[in-house]
Amino acid sequence: MEEEVGEAFVLNLLSTLASVGVTNTLPITTHLKLPSHPGNNLCLSRLRPRGVCCAYSGVGMGVVHQGAPGRSWTVEETHPYMLFLQRWWLTGQAVWRGYSVLSLDTDLHLSTNPLAMLRAPPYSTFDALMQLDSAWAVQGDSEGQVPTDERGQHVNVVPCRRRLLAPSAAVDAHGCACGAVPAPLLNTGFVYVRAAAAAGATSLPQLIFNRSVAKIMHRLARPPNHDAKGAVDPHAVWAQDVVNEVASEMASVHPGVSAAGRRCHTRDSACSPRPLSAQDARDAKRRWWLPRLPHSVWLATHRRTAAGAEACDAADASRRAPNDLQLVAWTSLV
Image 1 (cartoon, one colour):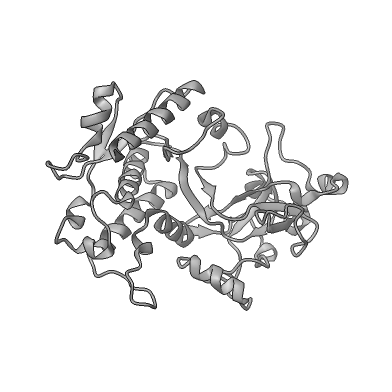
Image 2 (cartoon, one colour):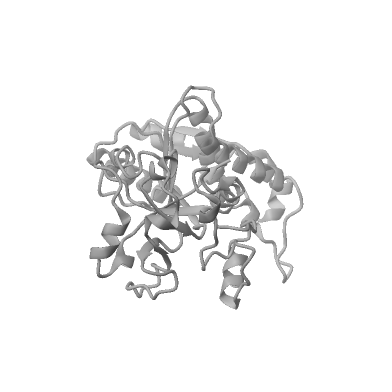
């Protein structure tokens, strides 16, 4: 039954992608390396017989087989964590070989061609893009103001005026720079990584995924982490958390931002100069991977359009509910 449901999700996503003009696709499945298991290799047993071009990978399966150390993390061959491990291994390998990769969860709903969107402003200047799994950065008059969206999504308010950051061609290449924003939670259901300039060249976005795979493999081979109650805590081998961890380790404020622009957003629980409230402490615990830094390393900008960046001051002057305007949150990698 699980195999049938999984197959249906894959076929539905392929149909949706084809309907918006994306036909160059490659579903990947886990190779469990368990010949007697009905789901040992779903690419060979279910997808290819349906005429679907697919691939499979079994990276790390040996370390989670019965009796292997990875089992102590409560992870086995069919665990979803292992499928994500294959995705990030494939992403790192493909990008290194000169391919841009769009990696998608099968439960996504797409209403437009995602590749066309990623190749146009405001996203065309970025080398890696992911979904947010936390509050959006939105424009406001002051950081502490109450957002107009009371659903709790728009809480990272950024006063969007150019004078908050020294004008810089390097920064403004991504839009009209507004100011610091807390490091977001990254959701890996929608991931796009552009190929390096030359095949075989290592790029910083590619390293996010190579390092994530290396961390997970290393951890699965050692004793597991435990929480305060003594239960196994598998977050350190959960691919999405580890991608967040590695991205935070590599994140850096853009070199084009002056020293005057290096400050903490009021809601950035990763910034060391500010004391943490009880709510901030709970948030920081959820984001166990965040390093403590003296300033925020993520920035927010107005979306860059084909005609260029908006003039932030002019936009502020005419907007009655400015914090409804969603901004683009981004960082540099080192």
